[in-house]
Image 1 (cartoon, rainbow, N blue to C red):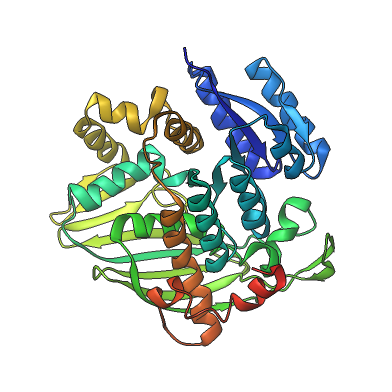
Image 2 (cartoon, rainbow, N blue to C red):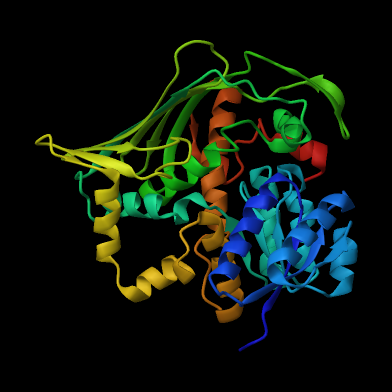
Length: 400
């Protein structure tokens, strides 16, 4: 058996637990293609906690670091899985790439378009792999529904998508894990940049690049926060409500609305309208098809979510199943981390590289740029950086 790929977990907060569950799942399934040799977090206690959790399933305990500089100097790892707040994606990842490590980077890949491009340039210059950690598209439900809509065309040609979520669910910005998510200088934006990044990726993955975006967004409830490192006390400035209309170059039209602060009735729906029927999302619509989707054909025939997934799985060869669902894994985090490991070990391309992450994130960023401008913007203008008024203060703050 060849030597396992030596990995470092960089950033040991909330989302790193999901990545760790992915590694544990692979290990439990018999995968021995990797070894987590280091955990790194500015809060060393967090890194120590993750190291102990890894010891419990891996049998060896990773080294613990509180700086990426020391991690790189140690030479312990050949690759890093970066799970940090958005504002630190570019600086940390560039340092790791320049130190010779391959990097799997949590979405959204960079806090701004400019930050993402700097990361991509560093990966190219270093000759290292840069992969975007996007778990949703890799799950059986999203894979099956993309196949049904875009390959099998079970509802014909898709012309329109309506996604809507309305529920009263104020966030608790007093907790460390949420506090930073309320400040656009750290997170880049609110839920459009966070859960919305999953929807953005699936839209681009299924229907190609957008053309034009018109978005209105609001912060109706600028909740207070206290003792945010580097910022002190303040009020949330990320959006809690939006409405947008987006057209794709393929001709598809997306209407997307969201709010989380209006008391009373709640609703969530995701519908994809085609020339021969409709597909309905069966789960959390901000994570498209995480729980699959059901079909209503033009003659009224209903095909449940499980039927769609069975048709998709039956369409795959054994080799395709083994590639898409390695070791039989169906968890999106398990699949995304293995995809990264496989690319390092075999030279195969990652499923979602930096460019794919950039294009998904640009869909989200175009919403902010439109709201900032008060008018529609072209996706390509946001992608190439000619429209950046919303991002300019963020870039200035971090010296990007």
